[in-house]
Length: 296
Image (cartoon, rainbow, N blue to C red; front, side, top):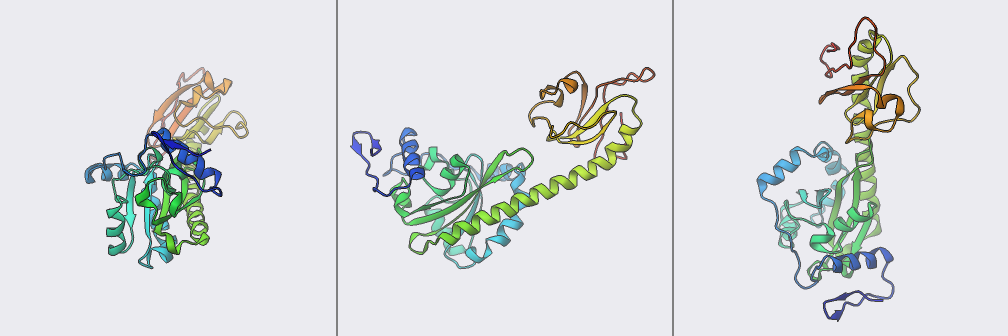
């Protein structure tokens, strides 16, 4: 069955991939006009800068640039990195190819989620959360059918949260499957860098937390800001347990720690005490990374 737009049928080729057919159906549900193009207003430069500053993807840009340099150096491809809403935060390539991309609104501040632009590599990869190449006529909007897009999602390895997408766009006539393979591989390397940095931060926090917890009587647990346990005293650490990122650890579902009292430190995470000393009735401890390990 072909998707419909208003009162006419939008034909799909018989060999259309299911992932593309499903995306076209969503595009119709979003009310995207294949002849009209974009519907979302781009962000100003100030608002783009604000989003960049708060994005974990900023620290990955050197790795993404280096990994995709073989494509962006050929002056026929542009690399873009978006946030989870499909807003382009970085757009890089030669000056000529960037100007060509900007004529199609593939510019910093533009929105490329499916609800804004229909089927495309960025938006559809955000929905499916897997690497995807969208070629020529697979794009929903007619103006984009000269392009080939290869995109891969970027996840936070601490909690699996989707952070955004890295995408390489070029002329449809030179599209090759190896482009998607490279983009997906670079995305995995970037996620690995986030994972390595996270483990390094855990080790730093552990060196501060362990001496503090050692001075406590009773049972206490320290976790980082993402809910990962870093140090414990008075009990064996629960196997595989960690807190949800958006909730206090005491509300994560672990019965023992649901009864604990917690203190919050934005720089380090949470520290809770499930058992209190008769001499010191302190409910919780808080510290900062590199703060000398002094509890309060």
